[in-house]
Length: 97
Image (cartoon, rainbow, N blue to C red; front, side, top):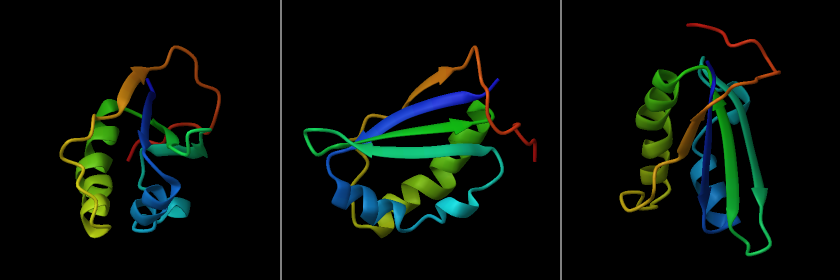
């Protein structure tokens, strides 16, 4: 069952610095959707959908956390994304690698 991961960063500048290290147009298999929006307080809320918890964990460890490091952003004290198993999903068919 797909997993929705909800996370955020304090500013659009930080989002752009970190996401600039990731080719979001060519995400790895298992990372189905990525969306980000700037909130009224200027923080950025991020919603990602993965085909499984395993895909989310792999992408986080191998791609997202290293992107924080490359951007010079310390992610060690950040709360991990809130992950929720979906009960309804209507979007691109999950592709199993």
